[in-house]
Image (cartoon, rainbow, N blue to C red; front, side, top):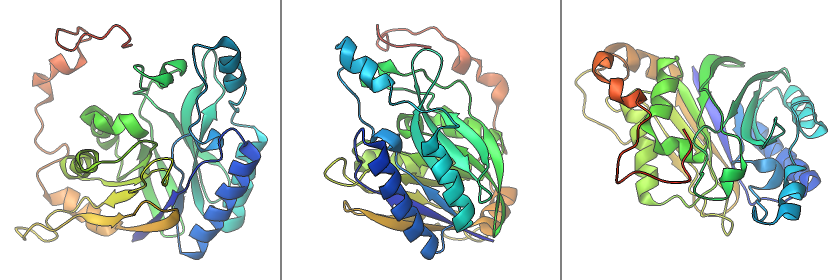
Length: 295
């Protein structure tokens, strides 16, 4: 069973949602011709990851009005497109919410139905993302593709820098973790993302904005480090893009991942959760105290 994830590496169109819709559709159509089962957008595509100055009340209100509900025409357009192309679409947008909006992704199946919506949990409260409402859960869904069923979860950008995000998704059964992104991907962040795949025995795929908005390097890693029992380790890189715009296909062997998870030592095989109570303690001690942090 093979699942092809199309990494839609693009530059954004700012607050012009109509331009974002048209460009997003064009790239989705390209992905479908390349055999994609799922097309993955970079972070907050509806407004090109644009933020106005949060200190300016007028600008902030104008920015808040760019948020869309799940029944907005922008999302409906991609629901119809998914049905037409017989391809799932992981669409990112600024989501209308009570109070401040959310940084969200909705997974639209090939029948045009929204099967899961995830809002970024680890918002960058030290930056402009303090204007967002954080998500409060890590959901996983079973997606029906033309190739078969696969369990999907999401992280968004800064989420991937916390091992708990991927760990929660693995514990809920995720086989693939999809990650919309919008920041510079250096070697450290790429290595960190690769580690999330290794320690949880999940496939991971990330789409970033192309240069000059960010630096591209959209990337995907396999879960399978040792392809046969007691075999030598292998490079798990499936694809790593350059800086330019493009559609990059990451092909995952789900049968291989499932077989590997049944025999290897990571994931949830030998954990000691009874000893991890400090992980849920909300107290923060120096040097990690930050006045702008929310819990």
